[in-house]
Length: 305
Image (cartoon, rainbow, N blue to C red):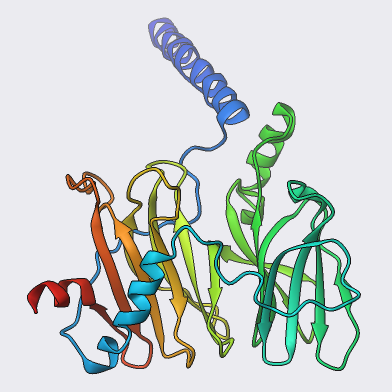
């Protein structure tokens, strides 16, 4: 019995010698770097291309224009500005008769951004953002205003540890980009899901989003968010080409909301080892037909012509 007790003592001592330093190292890494395996709910999905269809072929010219415009700021400021809107407009979006604006008093002061909504024939209304939220790309949907919230890890080390623990019970606390929405009926903001680079279709019923990970930076999955059902299945995954940080490809909707267009260049579709040996990457000219639920590669179709 005495020997058994000594054996258990050695096991406990050995476990303590291994577990305690490992726990300290883990907490230290979290406090300094953050939870490295968390990002934005990325999924790896290889694209499944359908045969060429005439409905997809009609978007060739628009895809070419998108690929040539990657260095431009995009359609953020095409929305008319109300005369009484204060601050500098950094983003604007319009759906039907409703508009939403993101403004700041200083061009680089992301934390001081304010959000306003406006309806034709109505007055300008400031939307109160939750404390600490860094909002980006607000857009009207059929169910209310959605925006991308970035939750940074640039906080004090003790706060990082506390937030790391609480994030296991509240996913909105994770250091990642996520979607929030304000219901047109209920009001108030609520967490939806991880994701960023929000692009709402003109009908407001569906939106394209990107998800990415803290590890293997530069790899994204493209999701289709159904605003009504809340589902967001992955269409495909792809790797960023070069070092332009999410600017080697662009997403846009057709005017009738029937097709999602993805144009630019990519380093490949696989999570690991998919970087192209070509210095210019691979061309992207993809069309997702919403009604048919099919994905078409027009760059491949062009090569076959």
